[in-house]
Length: 152
Image: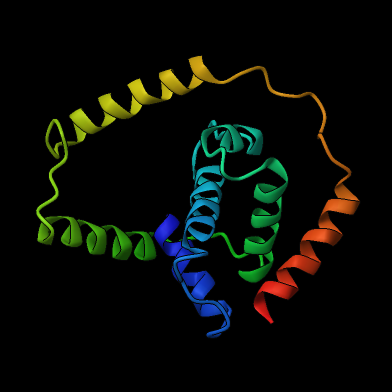
């Protein structure tokens, strides 16, 4: 899903945004966060992502999320045919590069590993805050200004 959002972002920005050494990590992180939030039943919060990726502050992660959503015009839907397209592209790339998946490619071993990984994240996640740690209005307007600066 992240790959779909990345391609959509590059398309919607009409050449104003390119993956370069100083921005690719932020762009990939934001597309991965969005994919997680849209498609995972129990997605992490932004504060969790900031703890996993300490080089990104919570404020920066919030800004990245807003920038991404605005740039793709909140179009987060991925159709079945789009999903299949990206799935088979990534699968072919993995095979061409000779990347093997530990435990094999069968769906049972993948489900078992994903389930175990999910339990580890649940156990490691700290208590989530009961309210947002920032002023939404101030953060949204600041993030919009930053998005405009990045894309212009």
